Image 1 (cartoon, rainbow, N blue to C red):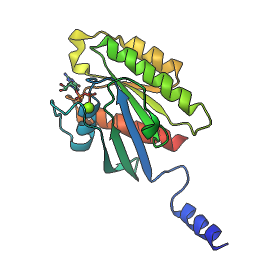
Image 2 (image 1 turned 90 degrees about the horizontal axis):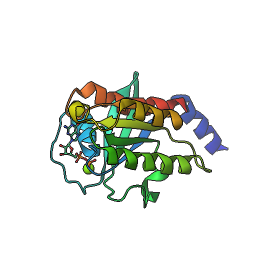
Image 3 (image 1 turned 90 degrees about the vertical axis):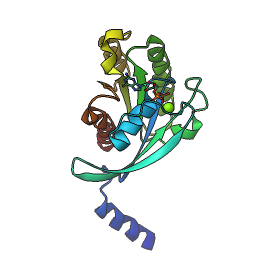
Image 4 (image 1 turned 180 degrees about the horizontal axis):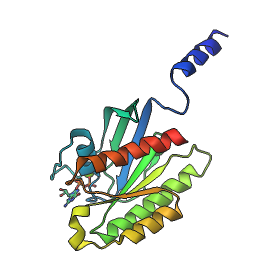
Length: 187
Ligand code: GDP
Ligand code: MG
């Protein structure tokens, strides 16, 4: 009985649609800029060289739409696409699936990730939103993936889609992470 009262009190303080924590997993081909985007979000800076094999999770206290949230970003470093996904699938509140607009192969890998994650979240598991991210927008001259291709993939899997650059403005990168929080709150 006392547990019931305790639960009710907690719910009064933190409404169910506003999670205090949001676990964001960043996925995509090696070299697509997952670490650069993560570091940009956390520090507002572009770090051009980052250990390609380093996988880690970083916490950041943020205020999104006047509501505090502890965002935990898992910057993954898989070399072989969506294999051994167990460590993040159940943990994730949301997925940022990244490709590089100047690399067609990274878009193919990204598609594999979208399919693998969707397969998982459509199963008997709570649905976690996916956000598709075309990175390296500053490399427009070398573009290999049309914006329309990204938009089509996003529409097919009903996910949000943004093109950004880890080395251009901070707010666009921050917005991608904040949109993930907003999507989780909408669930
Ligand atoms: P990860 O393997 O997905 O974590 O990719 P990294 O973040 O390590 O980035 C791979 C390479 O792409 C590095 O040389 C970065 O400097 C570069 N890079 C990352 N983001 C951008 C970007 O937005 N624009 C450009 N021009 N280069 C980027
Ligand atoms: Mg990396």
